[in-house]
Image 1: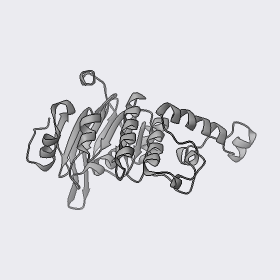
Image 2: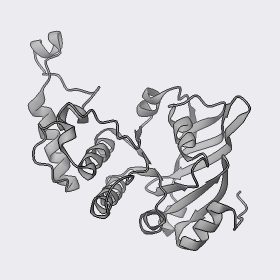
Image 3: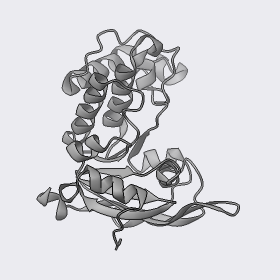
Image 4: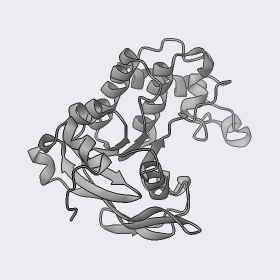
Length: 259
């Protein structure tokens, strides 16, 4: 953790707000993500966690605020802009298409075409090349999915989550944003998913993770942002908190000055 205190800040958000008419869903939120860290975002339902991530990545249009990468403001008007800026997001629904294979899911919208006349003229896909890239990545991440030609619906929730997280390694050049990566998973599959979160960090990505699981925060994260009623209620080093303190910060029983 000590080395992260001097780490470069690669992503900043300043004054992010989202209003729905008279309802303030997100109220002037600031966020800093350091290079090589796992940053947790916690809070009760309706606290603004998912709204923050969606405003950050362009999934919803923010009312105000700005986003900076490496100190330079970037315009993010949609998910394609976020991807171009090096952010890859995995939402709770995983964004996998049930009726197509793991290979097609992994490269959906980013297919590799054959490097020949047929590929260039007719967009003929290079499945052997895509398959080889996936199998190499799965081996590095210790993802045990042998049959990548089966449709996604044939796999368990943990395996599907593994595929979604592997996509962040393959395409998320710098920043992985995960919305409840262990939602609806059993204990064993949750452990597998959290091991993969650590793999993202080991592969050089910085991670923002929304979670309700306090043990995952304490065991796998470096810092934590506590959201309450659309605002940042606290920002803490995980080493300085325990489960009871986190619950207190989430509910408002404990107050911490921010900034």
